[in-house]
Image (cartoon, rainbow, N blue to C red):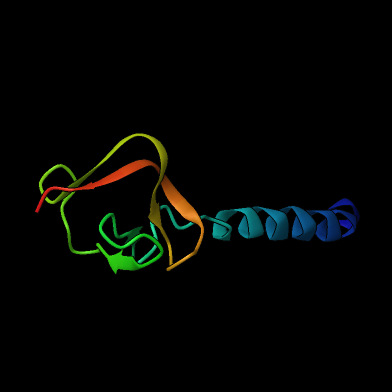
Length: 83
């Protein structure tokens, strides 16, 4: 019983580290997605509800989709509006 009591702090540390790792997950895709308007460079359009391959494609190199206007790049490629 004494051995078990001595191991409790170590077990609590392992349990806490396991829970911290389990709760630390990245959001794979932001809730809103933006693209730079090809007709008006410097302006961004929201394409969250657009369907890839139907309404737009991200072709070859460059920055295609952002998590906010002038935000972080979430998908590489050249934005091509198919609508």
